[in-house]
Length: 422
Image 1 (tube, rainbow, N blue to C red):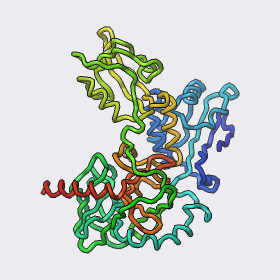
Image 2 (cartoon, helix red, strand yellow; image 1 turned 180 degrees about the vertical axis):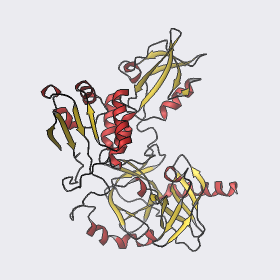
Image 3 (cartoon, rainbow, N blue to C red; image 1 turned 90 degrees about the vertical axis):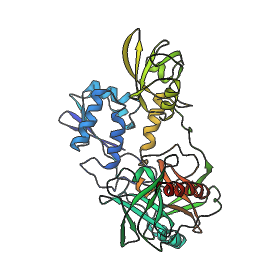
Image 4 (cartoon, rainbow, N blue to C red; image 1 turned 45 degrees about the vertical axis):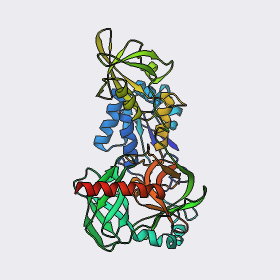
């Protein structure tokens, strides 16, 4: 939805971005940039040209969601592939005098009104509480500096807990809330970076322990996410059987590389690839990729593999003996870099992706509308069987969970790791 009004010969655009099944009309307007819009602004900054990027950086610093463009800047922003705001395509700067001011607003995903007949309606979630009664007893919440950051699964009665590693590591203070009353200091004792799981220890005894289900439900079955105080956070649908998503969205640059004395020499450039669009040529020597020094082809391949389609990557190279630099928008398997960049941005609208949102060895997909701080805890079927751990919110239509059978294997390795570290 785009509402337009003229103010001081400037046009002010208010974006109430449509989110599937949600009503934005009843959401209170804020004069500040909320967390969801802040995340979108931050993701655009590294992709935009310097003058446009500076405007969004200033908006973040000031907390003001209004940004003023010259007509030329507006035209460039409107056609940039990272721009997710379809409404501005209808604005013709030739019809206006002076600069153009855009006011960006996005209804908060946390405070949105939920209708009584929606799947996430309160009455339905309340009626489903009996199904999660056992799982919720073994669910905890992690908090840092007063803010919830993740849920967790108790895996040992003496205080061992599994949770999402990327949300809890590198924190000065980590607290674990058990039920409504008890709070314990928490320490990470082992990490599994590949699966983004952490084994956390609290000084507690006689804690209820998660009981893992042996089988997965059928596709299309309802799944439930409980919290630590016997509430169903959200209801979802089991979408796909467990599979690997490592490399599922593999990015590529589009060069034929060869190790050389100064870095990686380009022997070929794929037509219309990310490298081609960035202006790289045969004979160029890539010395740095994403600020990482390139010593051989393996360095280049591994660096690209850590990226996703739509990511921008800085490239330093030597051409004719002179050092130069460029930036490439990486493509995906089935789309150009520009299309991938736009797809990536559009997927963020209507969701707050987790800090680590993909590249998991074994997960099943469901459509529960989780927030990042609601990952790390159990997910059950309608009979209360714990079928896995919610590990990430990926985009507006997909969340990932590690299946229970895989969790048991990971847990054994983490226990061994923690024991060896003692």
